[in-house]
Length: 267
Image 1 (cartoon, one colour):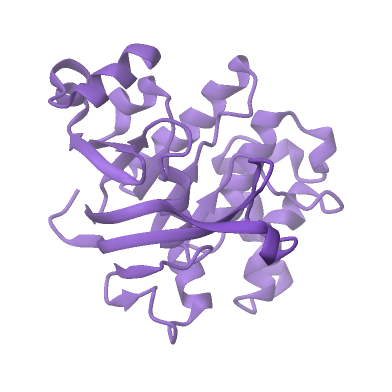
Image 2: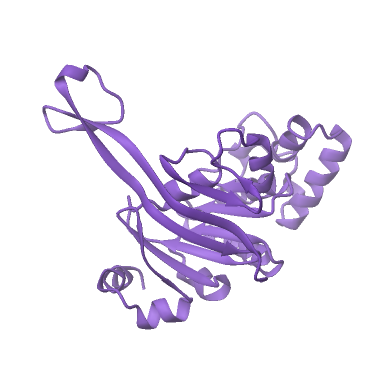
């Protein structure tokens, strides 16, 4: 890990408009404005954070604390309401920012895999380099085969997602993200949809990336991964960073009562 700042987040706030019906239920889309009350939900609230090149940051917190929204704002899948996010010299929150450049810089792996069901593992991985980067098909397929070998799935290149286990699908999703040669990898609860016996095979790939020096932000409650690979843990609640520090400090000497209460449920 170097001292160079790779990600800089300044005063980041994301507000969703929530429409509350008379019956007390909520929706993000109004049916009839006259019968609904608009409320502001602060998913991310005044977050300030820097991530150094090669650093692995684990983000933990209860459901609805803003963890996933923060990651999605880094990759411009969500737009900040206010504040800014910069990757090196590229301000991704600038409306004029080249979204393709952002997506080349930042790879993202989701909980639900999001593979194309009609494409083989090989073609799922090769698609973005061909379409976005204009890579020649033969070169893209060769690159995809190398990535399948990297995630220990070289014998699955002709398999479709439905023929793969959940762990295998997630490893293909990681290989697909790596196909764009990103400088940063974001993981949004990558193991939460997997059976327990499949979790290790995904975490092993993530550990290998961490050891190779990949800058990573990971939303997960896999504490084994935190102890093995994370340089820092961030605890979020109600859209704010409540506490942050090295894993040993957070696990054994958390300063905030809210952090200690949360850790009692997952350790």
